[in-house]
Image 1: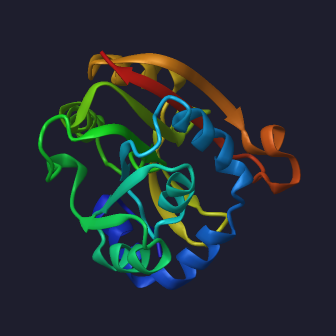
Image 2: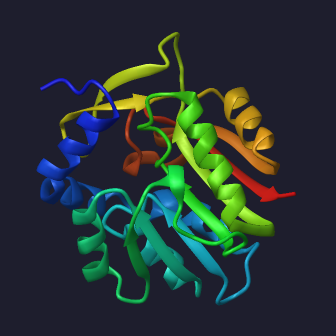
Length: 218
């Protein structure tokens, strides 16, 4: 089945949540722990962090292990239910990035790991970043990771190497992420593009490139 956009991708997650979560938890911590460490070193123990697009709570677990106070949010209620089982130290709620249910200046950091890439438009990404800016404190740290655009196509259907199923993705260039994040009011701390196999060796997925950005609210 071909996935045409955001709504269909959400439906796919709901229908395949168990198989996706099984593959999602096989994704080695090594592939995220360096980024978790880089993010966490800017925050004090007990800092309040939003895991934006928490899915089944894998990254929330890694963040909690760093001594952070984690709140996870996901649009899919079934993911929220699984996350509550997988990581009891964190709080999980159902909600949308486009209208975050939090007060201004609620968080010391926001972790948006591969969670902005299913939106169908750049405008939705901009609105999400504006919401992040609203709920993060001055000087707060933002982590964003998205799939890199390597060719002419910005919107693609990709067979996911973990789940073996097709899903819709919006891809980004390094310069595009720089512009989006700075336009939202953040100052870039670190910005890089990398190939998984070159960075992680055998545990990396062949041909998959990411853009990783760390930024601070100005």
